Image 1 (cartoon, rainbow, N blue to C red):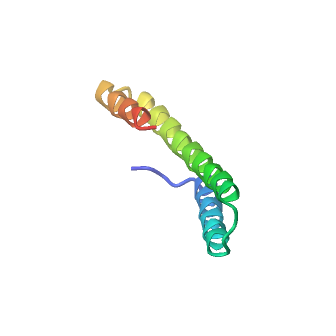
Image 2 (tube, one colour):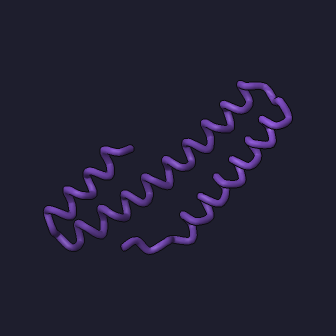
Image 3 (cartoon, rainbow, N blue to C red):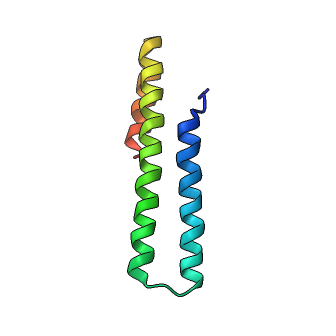
Length: 80
């Protein structure tokens, strides 16, 4: 089970806010390039959170030293 680091929650909340802003941009008819730029920023932010979660997961699994757990963590990396 994963403990939720407040930093991760804050990053996700920022991404959520960015998504709301993007929705507003789209409703206002803003330029496609501007929307794509913002969507790319959200995508990068979410990928960073995923990387942080996976890094923590691997650290925990390696501390437990179970080969099966490490393999499970490596499968998570492959999903990125």
